[in-house]
Amino acid sequence: MLEVEGLTVNYGGIQAVKGLNFHVNEGELVCLIGCNGAGKTTTLKALAGLLPFEAHHMYFDHGKLDLQHMQAHERLPAGLALVPEGRGVFKRMSIEENLELGAFHQPDKLAQETLVQVYDTFPRLKERRLQKAGTLSGGEQQMLAIGRALMGRPKMLLLDEPSMGLAPLMVEKIFTVIEKVFKQGTTILLVEQNAHIALEIGNRGYVVDSGLVEFEGFAADLLHDPRVREAYLGDESSSARDVNASA
Ligand SMILES: Nc1ncnc2c1ncn2[C@@H]1O[C@H](COP(=O)(O)OP(=O)(O)OP(=O)(O)O)[C@@H](O)[C@H]1O
Ligand SMILES: [Mg+2]
Image (cartoon, rainbow, N blue to C red; front, side, top):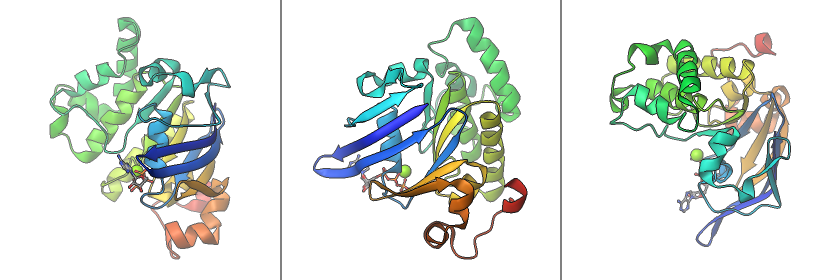
């Protein structure tokens, strides 16, 4: 679904991403984990066409679309949607107006059908559909950001730190929704500081350090890898979910 080889991104003279290689197969949920400043957000922004970048090879949709030669606004109609770090909702607009923007490229009838589906997934958004997005809680804004991306009926979602700043109960809720969207058939690339919960629902993961893939593997193996446990999970890592039950 997505193939990336030799991705580099520079900010002025500073190279933030230094030749990243990774891929995501159709139907997979792949995690990118790494410390602050590792280059995760920069990678997703490059995929979304929001930053200038260079790559040896960067193709989407089974080699059909060369992301190096597509504008940012062409990605959503092609099936690639970013849910940005910090959510990026339009605060003065209502929930419904935010959602409608996510389907700007769709015919009205399809957009209306998708809106019904998104409201089914997020009943909380439906209840508050006329409320200004800026007055929503952090968790509700995250739901809105995911819902807006789903309005474009994407083949693949790029999720940047969906759990950031949320209380544990809301993190659980957001991840339950992500898992549901994934099981309904959307391929996902997930950047997450909460490595434990991400690797529990993911198929594979890449550990990124200083703009390079340090190592990679199946999510279940990474969860037990001493290097990951030490750096990203803490020795006594645990979460609300039972690793053995979900394996
Ligand atoms: N607009 C910018 N201008 C200059 N440098 C930047 C800019 N954005 C990011 N950087 C630098 O690029 C590097 C990678 O940043 P990035 O935001 O991709 O990290 P990250 O892995 O997403 O970190 P975090 O976990 O904190 O979100 C960092 O050293 C950061 O300081
Ligand atoms: Mg980031």
